[in-house]
Image 1 (cartoon, one colour):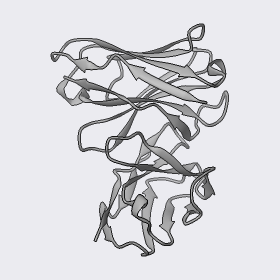
Image 2: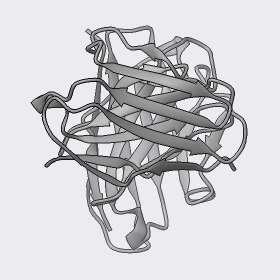
Image 3: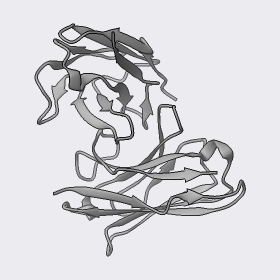
Amino acid sequence: DIQMTQSPSTLSASVGDRVTITCRASQSIGSWFAWYQQKQGKAPKLLIYKASTLQSGVPSRFSGSGSETEFTLTISSLQPDDFATYYCQQYSSHYTFGQGTKLEIK
Amino acid sequence: QVQLLESGGGVVQPGGSLRLSCAASGFSFNSYFMHWVRQAPGKGLEWVAVISYDGTKKYYADSVKGRFTISRDSSKSTLDLQMNSLRVEDTAVYYCAKPAATRVDYYYMDVWGKGTTVTV
């Protein structure tokens, strides 16, 4: 099974900061990779798919990059609405999520 | 408007059974694989099961294989999850989710329901 490892587990940042979250796959997954945002008590929301394609309606301050085994999610200028938990997911071989990164207000 | 609405959650004793359902609307249900994904309290997301658009293929996470059964009723546009031999570790919010492309197995999920809570 493919394992997904996210880092950091928790990230403290301020409004306006640029932040980056990393996800590593235990084997090559090409670009079969997505990022989701989840707010407390809500369902996950798709942000990015195919590693770098922004889902319709998602603000352009979100961007994704990477391929094969290493991927990043970058938020260029944090907004108050962005404080949430972020999950990566591979869909190359079955489906695996990372353990999540909680983005907190500093 | 594409919508998924889960139901059937509740409190059950270990060893018991529960059947979850997901009502789909706003899209061509018969053309999509469909997933169940769960989230234990305070934990991350765990993929549970997927069923093909025609119901002929079913895949399960190792953690539920042999205990859970995924099924669908295309005439009603509903997705079900029969959960037997429930364990304390099955306690979670269960979401149904739709992939973004038709008739494709491995794909990202673009629509999620609000979830239903199962407590064992």
